[in-house]
Length: 153
Image 1 (cartoon, rainbow, N blue to C red):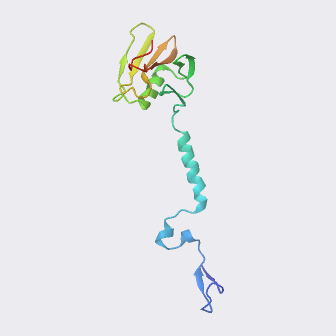
Image 2 (cartoon, rainbow, N blue to C red):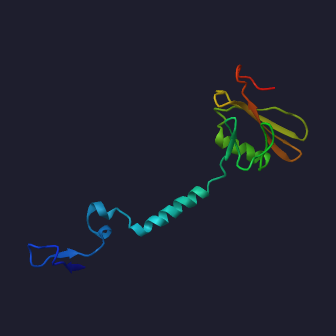
Image 3 (cartoon, rainbow, N blue to C red):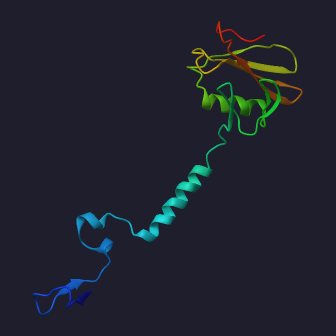
């Protein structure tokens, strides 16, 4: 659609311009731009994707990441809000098995336990013990000894 603009073209008696919005214009620069009313749609989609992520860690103890919703039950001891397998899956995403080796630490009936080692020890914790006893999953953060790099008694 062409529109007559007399005031914008002072040297010509009649000036015709394209009345389409700039984003619909045939220009290569403006053709790829999305209209402004689509911006909230993209923002909502991005927000929805960020909310759809699995629960991430909300706090740390001595630098060790804890699952969201973990409750402190003692010094460096926490109750996991999820079951044993889910807690191990959470730590599998946070701490890769290649960089943070794991080993079983208990072989008693009714008790499952895994130690996650922190080989670099620069984060203030030496390891994590994840264990399940009587249907309850707990996490114990092994603090790094300040002088020797060992564990506090």
